[in-house]
Every structure is written in C-alpha cells, then in structure tokens.
Length: 53
Image 1 (tube, rainbow, N blue to C red):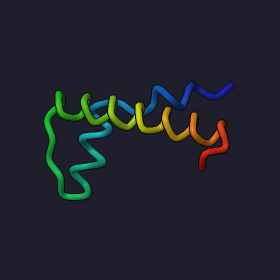
Image 2 (cartoon, helix red, strand yellow):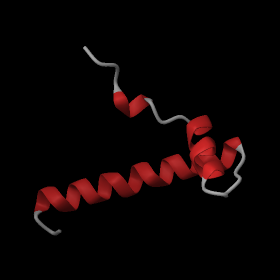
Image 3 (cartoon, one colour):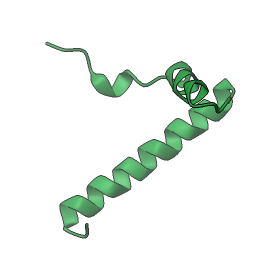
Image 4 (cartoon, rainbow, N blue to C red):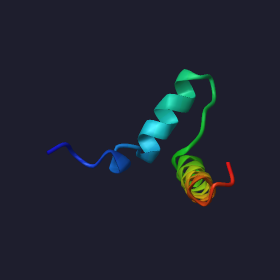
C-alpha cells in the first residue's frame, strides 16, 4: 500500500517549493504556512460537503 500522502508535505518541502517560486521563508514560517493551508483545506472540504460551494 502507498505511504500516507498527507505526511509528504513537510516544513522543509514547503520551504523548497516557495524558494523555487522566489519566496524565502524559515522553518517556523513554513510551519505556520502549513497550519494555515490545512485550516483552509478543512474549511473548503466542509463547505463542499455542505453544498455551499
């Protein structure tokens, strides 16, 4: 079985992705960004399941 894809996004990977796009962040900023993205994703899924989107 495949590994859990939810755990593939690490703060280090976030830093790498953003650096590639020209934005430099430190590890703490990457952790904050990850928390924000997870919250937004949760809200989007909740709204979709409620039929609000």
